[in-house]
Amino acid sequence: MNATTKSRVAVSAFFFLPGLCFASWASRIPDISAKLGMNSGQLGQLLLAIPLGSLASLPLAGWLVSTWGSRRTVLLASVLYACFLPLLGWAGSFWTLAPALALFGFAGNMLNIAVNTQAIGLQELYPKPIMGSFHGLWSLAGFLGGALGTALIGWHQAPLHHFLLVLVVCLAIASWAQAHTLRQDVRKTDDGSGGLSLRHPDPYLLRIGFIAFCGMMSEGAMFDWAGVYFQKVVRPDAALVTAGYVACMSTMALGRFLSDYFTHRFGTIRMLQLSSALIVSGLLLAVGFPYLVPAVAGFLLIGFGIASVVPLSYSSAGRATSVSPGVALALVSTIGFLGFLLGPPLIGFLAQLFSLRTAFGLVAVVATGIGVLASLPNPVPVATPQAEPVA
Image (cartoon, rainbow, N blue to C red):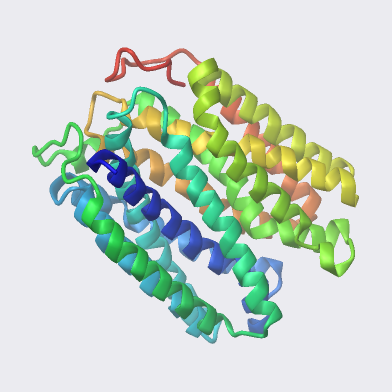
């Protein structure tokens, strides 16, 4: 195995790690919510702590990647993210869980920015798109993390014990993978302008960020509310309550592994337009026909639609010429990650005010923004002339 291949495996491991951590938390949300006696509105308020922590990490994450480099930042953020996970299982009240979730969101966004900077560096070493495969491993980890959570719930294991097990696994992954990550970021700048660039973002990066926001809001809704939607709206047998979540995560993981091929064949714009259509169609099917078979079919479509939005957004951001990849990703991934994290609490509020079906209908409206924004003219040049057109 040559050095480039080792680096690709190592970066893939650092995508797998946060997927496993987040899915472990997501799989225990109903359990922890029930333990604390929270309704949908209170859960929505609690989940706001994660995007607040994520937003707070933006200045530090951009500065660390621009000055330290993504290699050291990946290690620091991955260790912090894994270590903050057990705090979520230890917390015994709303007021202890909320700050723990803020720390979890803080480390998660820092890791998200750093590991995608590594991925962009690797992309420049390959002639064809590879970003989808990295995000596919995040989704695969999400699927496996959800399955592990389901198994441990069945074995009556407390969330704290579950999260401690995941911590050990994540530290083992990080200790091996760190030695093989890229040592130098592409187009790394030392002018200290990362903060200034983020305060004055160009229209191209803002548009890519809002595409990521729409896609990740849809993704976050599936992670946190798919099981609840089936439990309260579809109402299948108890053994099938997770059918929608499993359907969506399965096609999202599969779609991400396939997206590199289809992006190379059809281009970024067409892929984003198709993604938007699939998400909207799936949500409308699940909302309009809240029965087991059509709802599962809808969630399968949603998973395929979500699959390529984030990889395409991040790879497009990394090709911007106005700032370094780390700074571009700090902006785009933070806007996108806010959609991922703000979506679930917003759904909780809307479900409390109206209904869960109404809340899912709003997500369909948001998802149309992906296709609309992708269809606008490209406002700025990109760094790689031979690359496919960006959104």
